[in-house]
Length: 453
Image 1 (cartoon, rainbow, N blue to C red):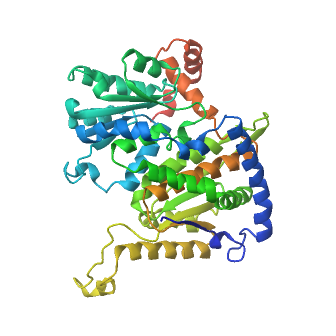
Image 2 (cartoon, helix red, strand yellow):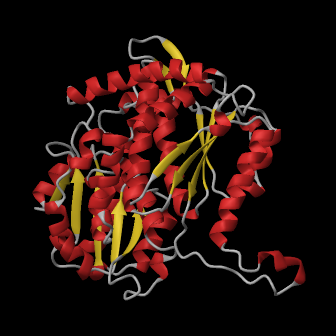
């Protein structure tokens, strides 16, 4: 059974000058408890639904996935932000490195996976050149059904399918709002299979919903195991949630304006990217829920060990002391192998050393080095990385982040700072209803050639 631990030795005042004392920890736990109380009230009112997702009934989804898993060579996931980062994190963590380069047999007779997120033409065009329409299935994901990048990418995929396959229904599933939105209307008109994203599930909290579960099931990933891991946090991990939330709140109050997530596993690179959206979009808020200006938030930074030991650790240790670093370490690494260091005398000390041991030793060394530089660090430990422990990680942070936000009375479930740029873009694209935004944009976006060199 996967086990998750939270180690805050090197954030505690016993070991770190300026670290959190036991007295401060208890005080900040009370502050976190207020956030948790507010979160539970929102859950009970039906406004927030992510804590219920571990109970999602996967029966219909798994039954539908049976045909897709065995009948297609390629799976294209069409979505952006929370509709893409979650499944990318799952694929990165659970499937083998280089999965798409493996033969069909070596992949377990499962499809390759491609994520069409950005509207960079080189990306979507490359995906469509690699894939064959007759042998491709697409999952189109947008809660609102209005996401312009998803609509643009899917319009290309739709025409690609339409020109090459006889029955569109056999190649597409839509994940969107259960009742409204243009994507829901499109799916209904074309009699496409759909899975709903409930109104209470925000995009960055949706990886345990059909947003992440549908494509994961198509790839043969054990989604029930992932949900079970998430449930373990809801049922048994709240003490870990509250402790980490309290520690983060303490260091935010102490002026630590940058929150670094540094997994020592390349398999968690995309998880760190997912974390950055969750943290930044949820906690970066100018106003409280009662309209008071607060300008709250810290900047999330994604790094990967041991790679970033050779770059960013220099800044973390000798630059401004404005960071908290959270490591994620694995006790056991899949496919671990020992090396022979006898190819050259200088490397004989490596003889018989397992790569996993080296990676874990480098993690410990970095913890120690940061401590000597008075940089607080935490470590989340996993004995193994699989669907269960990944579910634990997702749910751990999905609780921590809103608890922090609600403890200071900001709304961690909206993103007003994101909306204005979207509306300007709609205006530039001449979308009906956004004429005023186009005019406003044109008034703002004036540049002088004197400042362009």
